[in-house]
Image (cartoon, rainbow, N blue to C red; front, side, top):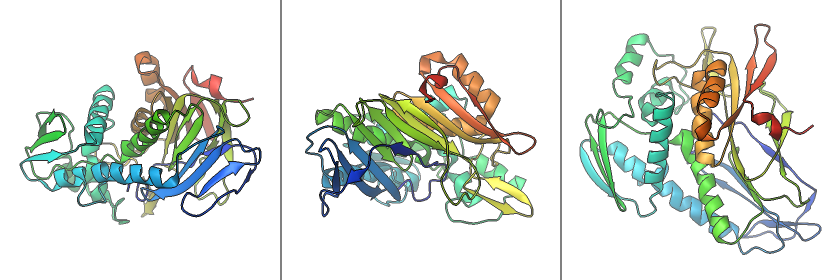
Length: 356
């Protein structure tokens, strides 16, 4: 699972015409009243998924999607003891593990790229800090500086330092240089699972669809009205009882992911501890950025950079997108000003997605 204890997800909504239920049971598939399109709803990774295929025919079923998710989780879920990543985390030295899906390799290499590009603001070796700060076990005891320092010794995703790795076909040859190194891909794996479903639907011949898993989204083609997909972004207000949309995007053939601090945190002795951890300092971020929404060509990329931007903050994130045009990113940032009011900033290319 990723969504169950993955704490940096905003919930997105797709706007579409009213649906009428046409079939239940195993497939849990719906069609629109015009007979054009299919909707499949389900649960995976401790969260929900929502797939809309806006075409007249589809052989895709809930059972087939669930099988995809099971295979994916068996590679990258830290909550499955027999998964590839769990086996690596339990290893104390050199280990060879087979991963015939190559999902781990794909995730690892993508994570390595984002780690390098962001100068370590995105770091999958942050597992000891996540565990230490209690966000995986609902603990609420803030760490002392010396405790953080002791954990930072085992946080570094640079090859040749705490680990070495070689990918040989389906074989992963992994050597830990310290047994306390543990990997946590929760900040990118859910986005990658969206990409896995995206590739599956494409192989099935579909051109027009929407995929959402735990708030991570990718859209292709047109919706059932024959226009670009409409996706809403939440107002970032703590403990909001009813969802309220801050803005609506019109988008096609892109992935969207959002990371945010405003819904998951704890307060101890008057100090608010956000769940976004700075891998460099070992402490929760303290800046005013509430959420970062990233548009990219694939969802794993959008997911990973959204996490990194929550560490970097508003100004640094905007500068990063401007200085790295080859990455093809756009970002929309919501932050609180000195009066506690929500303000927004965005990259130059983001405005074209916002509806009037």
